[in-house]
Image 1 (cartoon, rainbow, N blue to C red):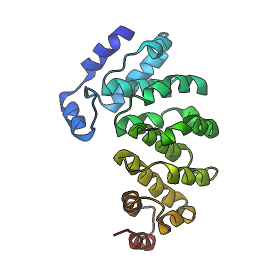
Image 2: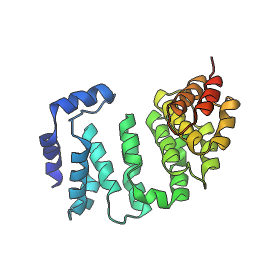
Image 3: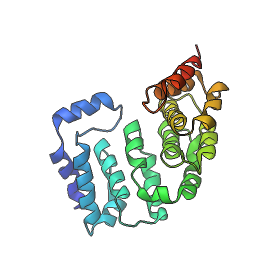
Length: 229
């Protein structure tokens, strides 16, 4: 099975979808052009295979699509331990070079939602990692697993501490802050009133929040008044 994965992926590729993704996703990896439902189906087939552990240990994920597949396989493992997910995900994260890898894969392991403290502690070094997509990974972890009643204060604190200045990091912070405004407006709005973030993150968070149908018109007007000129 392992040796045939690359051939299988290439047989599933669609040239029009490849062209679409190449316009949408800046990456140094070759994009094959495989639709997400097809990748998810293949991931479940690999998980059900007796060779799944061999695949995880030996896969040479050198294309954009195969990195997605590998992450989907991890997310679909049957009752994995956190240690197992960390073991395979840590080196994979270092291969991320685009927003789609981060955003698609990080939300996949269901076990993360059950162990938010351990997950945050494990990935905390990514907060100040030099890599643009490692820091984005940390922000997306916060957004996916910590913007809730239990962890909102911790999440907001970490979001103010992530080094800014890299585009895909800044966009992720703005996205997370906009979500926090929707869910925990009273706790989040002081960060904008005090202009804690860079001008770009600040204004982008306001823009994204104002695009949400879950924020009242009068609140959107107030947010607009907080934009930094």
